[in-house]
Image (cartoon, rainbow, N blue to C red):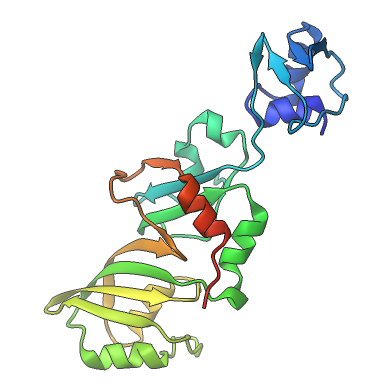
Length: 239
């Protein structure tokens, strides 16, 4: 890897800024000053110092966010704020992206990473990775709905969903439920309830695979995954 790319990736500025840094003689590799931005280094094998301090190279970043309402699950948008806009600059330099989407008005667990292979495994329809949501529903959710969801419901466009596991927490004029699905169609949870003549008025994602939302995170807060969470996610095998 080129030294300028490596230093830019871990937050020492743009490529242009890193080149200026190199020219000052502030960067050493295995004790030798490096000024050539094109020089290749192996951050796993070599000691890289900037201004006398050793730097640690990280290729990937894995963040758990408790997404608030009002933010788009996108990397950028000309008109609206995205989940990346509230990240610290030291995290944005890794060029992460949200894994899957949560609607603008949906809260809860959102994984943000720059690990494309992991994202592909979690989002691939072939993997059937389960996602669990808590929702407040306008209308009385009944056992008939539980049965319908278990068999799969037909959406307004004719698509028949895969089975979903619906749990009724409280039923009444408004109902509290948990729903686990293995798909990620556009507005799927909302459309599934519309298929049984009900409306989602609040939606929050709780889990994705074996990753669970840290309930101590306030809305809009995020943190890096723990080693245990990351290992579990990387080794996750859906049924």
